Length: 377
Ligand code: AMP
Image (cartoon, rainbow, N blue to C red):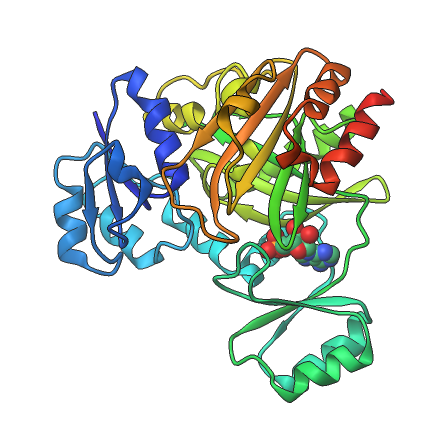
């Protein structure tokens, strides 16, 4: 079976690595001739809007899926005329627009922060009055890793933004003073069966994910059920097939949904070593119509992203149960070029292993605080 994947970045790379043992073959489509998957699979280099290239790409494929959520919905719909496309293009559409996403949460009774659609400076001023400060203005489309976002804390911040108001369609959100950021990875198969990974605690810096802890420390069963119930409603309403990530804030002991990603997700990379079946394997099982794999964790894991620079591999791999994944991308400031997963049988052992990581990682403030909280358990 040959599976077509739209997007050729590290998520596609790891999907292919998970799929080869199942005897799946892969073909990728990506506009960049440097897409990392070029090392391990055939790749069509073309724009997503090039329908002739899409037809060539789709020829002989059993199905198409994606690893990049900003694939134009029209491209997914065009492909769906010739070949099954999972998750359905409607899921892609819902996830590409923050307003649609938040409206979907509301419709499904999933708590989210208060928000307003914004199409100009006057509407913005009224919405700031209604929601109050602090608040966050976001572009409805194409924002990622904190790009296309403005946090407004004071009247001066609001006035400064009004001077040079962004032209794109926007959404204004009430700022959530969250206790922590969490995410849940969920998977739904072709017959509607579902499975959920445990909630993961995520730490960001500069708008980029730096660290995920799986399972989230001190995870209450109630919170896990709340997250699973929200994810299940989204999966079912979209008739979803594949892995879906739901990003959440924990605030006052409750969960508020922030956004969804209709694909495998950075906060699920730990599952390669830290779960019985990884998110990548489960996505492929789902889209190929195979039974889902167990999502049970194998102890405790920490996933650290490698942003812009690499540690010394020998020093890193000397720490027991530490795993290095490099994506074949050249280092550049702010670029995700790999990740490291540290696994252990207990939270205490994980904390010890994190403290043994090379100095490269100890620079990260969060890492030190995580060790401190881990050691106290
Ligand atoms: P997003 O692109 O929506 O995932 O936002 C990127 C990051 O900005 C999140 O991971 C949060 O750390 C922060 N953030 C986004 N929206 C809000 C909000 N309404 N209140 C507080 N922090 C937010």
